[in-house]
Image (tube, rainbow, N blue to C red; front, top):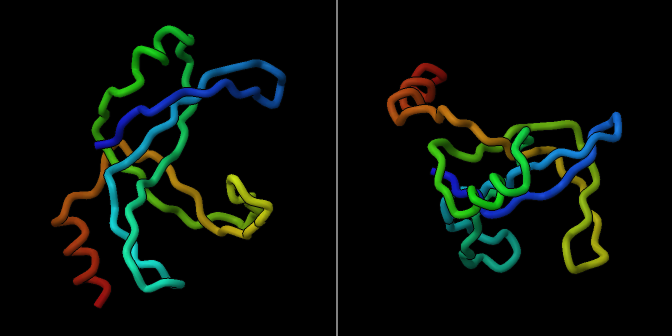
Length: 113
């Protein structure tokens, strides 16, 4: 499940404004490469919508089926919030309304071996 946490106004290439929903996935425990300690995080992504402000605001807090998944992309620069640091990333997160089942994951891994 993912949760709608917010919405933001964006502008398309042709100058038209639209709303994008901000989605957040389940909490994950990640092992820090620097400290060796675990920290809690959650994947987030945005999806475009044709919905107006009133409907988008009403969706905040609503849970939707699916997951937020990681996908490789062309490298791009990313400014770390609340700092002057700029890092290069080669992945993006996207919303998948039809996540793979455990059986699909297991059999794909087994077939690859």
